[in-house]
Image (cartoon, rainbow, N blue to C red; front, side):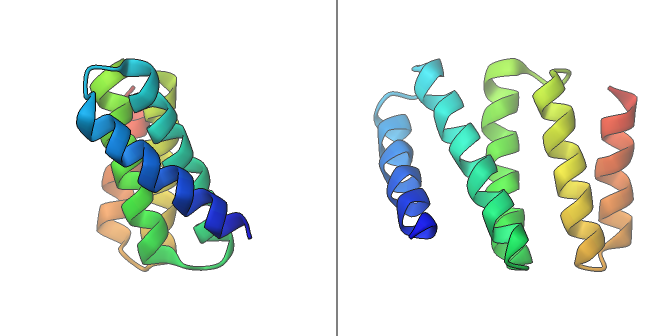
Length: 102
């Protein structure tokens, strides 16, 4: 049931952001929803799906907040964690290093 709710929200927010890309509130809500959906996917070991959601969330977070915001650091860390779990150690080190530099 949680997944149904997340996919409903993600799909509707994606369309809303597509129609009104300058609406920062909608963009941030979309980023937050993607982040929480990714956490759920990660808890189910659905790593590649979680990775895609985290990547999208980071993109929108950076769009609104920039590269040096605390949420950007959190998402970089999450991406590093997922890459590590997937065995992509070089990518993991890259994301975690970027987070440390902020």
